[in-house]
Length: 616
Ligand code: AGP
Image 1 (spheres, rainbow, N blue to C red):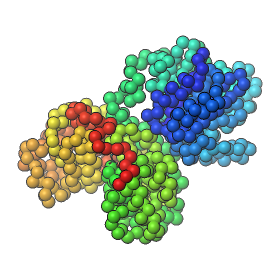
Image 2: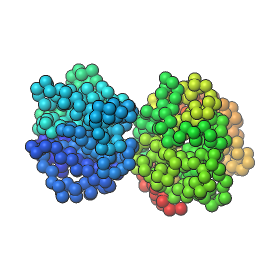
Image 3: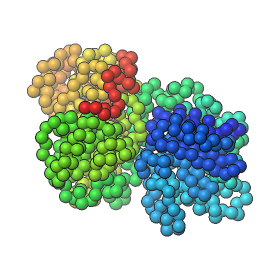
Image 4: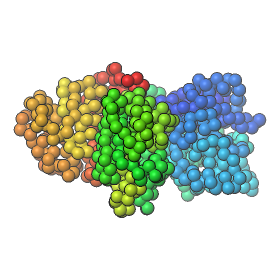
C-alpha cells in the first residue's frame, strides 16, 4: 500500500524520486505526487493514474531542487483523485504518508475547530496541519532543522495508528524528517546524500548501505548525518547494513516470489485490517468502519454472500460465523451461478459481495440482480472505489495492500478477518450475545497476527512435506465445519499454481463417493485441528489410512495422536476454534507454494489465469 520516497543531497531530487517511485510500483497505486523545496519555496505536483502522468506533469512544470519527497497512493481514505493524492501541504510543510491514522476523525474535528480548512478527504492532511501548527508556535527554536524535528515529534505524540512519514519544510531546506510506526521505512545512506523509501528497491541505484527505522522512531536526515530518536526523544545509535540483493530480489523483499512474500505479509495485513475497527475495552465494533448503517444491521433477516473462487471460500466461512455468532440465516453462493438462477431476494436481505479486486464481472452482475429486487448490498473488497464498491450501498475494506501473485493469500485471510468483524458487529447490534462474548471474539482476533507468525516459522517443515509429495498428480483435501472451506481453498491453491489435480471435500462426504479414490497412490490432506470436530475428522483420517491412503495432516501443535498416525504433519498453534481457519490457511498456502516451486511452474503468474476477472 502506498510508496514513499524522500531525497536530500546534491542531485536534482525529481529524477531520483520518480525513479524510486517506479521501483515501488509493485506496491500498487492510483495516483502519485512530488514536493520539492528550492530557494523559491515549496512546489507540489500531483497526478492521477500512472507515474507517466506525473512524469509528464513534472516536465510541463519543471521542478528544480535537491530536497524532495514523492509518493504513490493506494487509496484507503478518500477517492483516488488529484486532491487526495500526496504530498499534502499546510503552509511551509509538505507530508507524504503510508498507513492509516486511526484517530483522524477526532483530530480533524479539533483542527477544524481551530480554523483549519481541509482540502482533501485523507487522514494524511491532518499530519501536515498538525506539524504546521507546532512549527508556527516553535519560533524560539533557533535552528530550522531542530524546529522542524520538534514540530514533528509533538505532532506524532497526537497520532494513533500506522504511519511511515516523510516531511519537509520550505524554511528548512537542509532537513528531511521521517518517522515510522507499523508501516515500513528504510533509509539509504550515500555520500553527502540520504534517500528514504518504503522499500529497498527504491534505494539501490544510489546506495546499498541502509538503516531500517524501528517503530516509534523519528529521524532528522541532513546531507551528512542521520539523527534517530526513539519515541521518548532519546538518541538511537544504529549503523547501516549492506544490502546484497539484486533490484529484482529487492522488489520481492528478498523472497523468491511475490506469492511467498504475500504469505509472509499476512500478520501485518491482518493487523492493518483490524486497526481502528473496534475497541477491546468496550467490545464495540466501529459501525462507520464497516460500511453498514446500524438500522440495516438491526433489521436484516438474512446475510447472503456472493463471490467467486477464493472469495467464495472465504464466504463459506463467513456464512458459518454469521449463523453461529449472529444467529442469522446465511447463505454463500457462487456469483456465476446466482446471476443465471432466479434467486429470491427481499429488502431485508443483506447481500455481501466479496471480491478482493472489486471488479469481478460475475460478482458485479449478481449484485445488480439483488439490487433490482431491493436488497441492500455491502461490498467487502480490498480496493477502494472499485466497481463493486461504487455500486454497493456500503463498502467494508480489507487493508491487505496490493496483491501481485495471482493466487490469493493475504486477500483471503483479511477477508476472513473482515467477516468475523462483520459477524461481531451483527452480534452487537442485534444484542444476541453479551458484551463479554464480543470482547472474547475480538480478543481472539487480536491474537491472530502473533499466532500466524508462529505458523510461518514452520515453513521448512511444510517445504519437506511438499518435497516428498510434489510429483503427485492428484491430491484430496478434507475438512469439516470451518475446515471445509479450507479444504476447498487448499485444493484451489494447489491446482492453480502447481497444476496438480486437487479436490476439496467436506470430510463427512467421504463415504458418499470420494472414498473410492483412495489407494496407496492418493495423498489426502486432512485438516484436523483439535476443535469440536476433531474426533469425527480423526475417524475420516482412519478410513483413509485403512485403505492405504497417504495422510498429510494439518494438526494442532502437540497432538501426539496425530504424530503417531502420519509423518507428514504440519502444525498450527493451539487457538480458539473461531480463528482456526486463519492459521490453518498458512500451511495450506505454503504446501501449494512449495509444491509449485519444486515443480518449477510460474508461481506468480500461472498459466491461463488472470488476477482480475472482468469478463464472465
Ligand atoms: C484465487 O487464488 C484466484 N485467483 C481466484 O479464484 C479469485 O479469488 C477469483 O477470481 C475472485 O476474485 P475477486 O476476489 O477479485 O473477486
